[in-house]
Image (tube, rainbow over the protein chains, first blue to last red):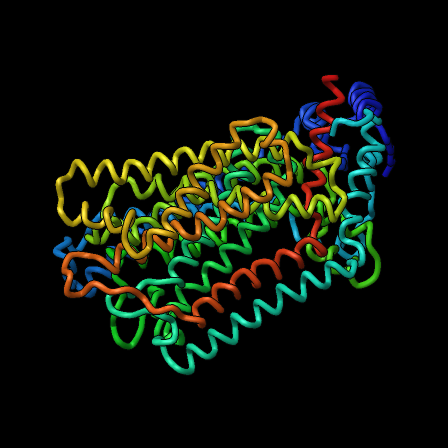
Length: 142
Length: 443
């Protein structure tokens, strides 16, 4: 594993460009940066995050669960209060709305942790700090 | 960040050193402040203990005023929480740059304020050990909660709000915890290592991270509006004069952001000085926040006027009697003080010089906090004490227990906030770095 370290973002980007131009495939390059560097992500053609599928699944589950919970429980004890219908959609919408957000946010977090394989025990035990430097790791040819 | 334009790498080191420097061994004044806050917190807990032991008559509630200081405190603290989400999520979506000076503090404030607020519905309960009856769960009584009741909506709204703000706070902290772990040693380093989950900052990590942050901001934005709307419906769904109105949701949300911005000022003005963060939180930032406060104060003022206009136009005798009582009745002095604090005083912020004067902003923010607490008190107590039938009119009792618990809630809030200041980075280091890196490209 070759390692190039830079203090300066521009030098880092120049080196990255050079490596890619010299024919090193993007999948063998790994970068570690103190801040997100969009130019580098672009150059390495990092695929768009599939996190949205987690978010959507969570949010949809919350929405359905909100209505299911309220409607099921009201029907299992059908007690009329304040002359409102047993299955009253407007108030149940509030529960569904809150659960959409709750499960959507939690699913996003879980998805994020899963996609990044966090928590990562090896890196907790040995963080291999790169500080404020921009680092390029290049895997050697097999 | 006006001063000399050093290169980004030096700035990166500098901002880490400055922000994490604030987490060093505390000075004597810090310990004194913490001791004061913990004492108040202790008094609050003792009062609550006494109330549980001896019964709800100690809380000053009576018939007809069954909602009193605890519900006031609940609405006040939930309101305080709101500006944290406004600053961290709404302003993020609007790309308002000034948020970076406040967002970490405001997010911490949100989490702590919701924790404080969440206790009050429990304190308000006669038999607190049955609080779990609020949750829908299969039980041997074969009973479910009443989902048509705003009080149950509140349970869902506030618990969702707490969870999502805590997640948002933690996610924002993640790269900064990774910075903290290499700048401390010993057991503290291990704590930060575990908390940062082994974060490195690889290309894929940043890609997913930015996506996650955006999604959480997009979730938090409608959430923050829904939470205080639901809180306002606790009142508006009833038929009590002064409560039963459709403007309550926007009125409460604006009031919440107003009081929350005031609390952010109250917290950050001294914090900036004590932790020497003048370079990062500048007068421009404070001015921007003061403008938000001014704007929301105008909405609140409009709502105050509108309430009278509606009472006047309805020709409803109860509604009119209620607002007459509010203006001239037993609670007129707190009401007038509230109008001064929330309507007249913020108008001075139209003057640019005053907006940029931190001592003045501190005074205004404290008085706005007082005013906003009084607003909730006035709405709750005047509504209940004079409803429809003069035979059941009555005022609540003064209660030292309720005052002690209110004091305790401030103690709890400041205790947790002071602990936060010393254990977590008070500014979003990574975001500040990003901003600077971005600036250097375009300079």
